[in-house]
Each structure stands twice: as structure tokens, then as C-alpha cells.
Image: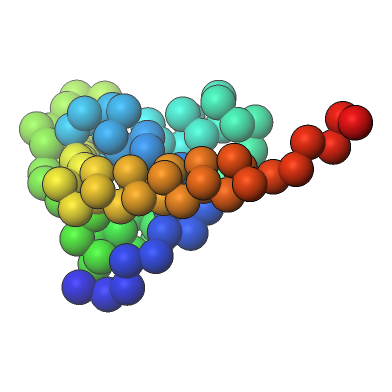
Length: 107
């Protein structure tokens, strides 16, 4: 397993994989990112992040059933692993601690 640091984009992709509960694939992740962040990304960027997350042990991939809408081709689906969930919780904890240290600038 490679390093366990999560970059900002990897964290976003991993969160969406977790939210989609085993139904995540490149296009579904892309649509969620664009809908919830307004950020435009390419499917190749999503796949690159998914490959890195899989190398780190944070997601597992499997081949889903073939569909008529895809001309009989199967989708590669992703689900979050226990290690991925732990990495997200750690990133959230660190981020929350840092935000708690942020001085109030409204005064």
C-alpha cells in the first residue's frame, strides 16, 4: 500500500464513493462532484483518483452487471474499504482541529 495521505480531490472522490454505497463508477462520481461543488472535472481525472485510492487500499473495485444502455458492457464499480473510512475520519478530525484553532476574525 502506498502513502495514506488524502489529497483534497481524493478526499472528495472517496466521500462520494462512500455516499454511493457500492454503486459508484466514473460517471456517477463525476456527476456528483459537478452537482455538489460546481467544479468541472473529466472522467479521466476521476479514474486517476480512483486508481490511486485503490492502490492505497481505500477503495475496492468490482465489475457490475452488463447493461443495455452501455451496449452490453459492464461498469467498474467502487466501494469504500474499512481503511478508506478510517482515512476519511482521520482527515475530518485533523481538519476540524485546525478549524477550531482558527481565530475569530469578525471582531
